[in-house]
Amino acid sequence: MTLAIGQKAPDFSGVDQNNHTIRLSDYKGKKLILFFYPKDQTPGCTAAACSLRDHYQTLKSHGFELLGVSPDSVASHQKFIDKQNLPMPLLADTEKVVLQAYGVWAQKSMYGRQYMGVVRTTVVIDENGHVEQIFDKVNTKTHGEQILKIYGF
Image (cartoon, rainbow, N blue to C red; front, side):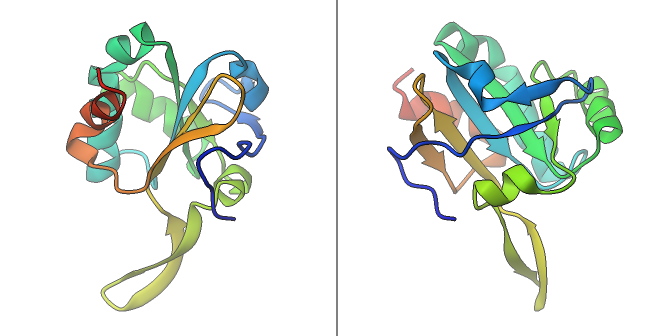
């Protein structure tokens, strides 16, 4: 599936690092920054998550909620949160249901090798559940600033 700005965001349900069920409907009436990343504790993913962490209060003050999604386990997410002091929940999409619904589980290649993996992408969903913004070229070191700049903050 290819997402487009203005379309209804695919519904989802999954568990976070505390085994709490999180649904898209939990964010009705709020803006949601839904960031998809390949793997906990890897350099690029850590840089992106920490950039969002560092801008978390500013994003929250402008009405945004944040939720990370990767195919890592609940336990892996908890370790990542603890080690990096991340304030946002992380959804454990081990079956890749949410990743596929958002079209970010795709064929990739590295050094000539083809494999399936997460295409680093951030989707901003508006208060009514529609796709408002898509970041498909995430700057891992400055991702928080990247989002704030698009919104003029």
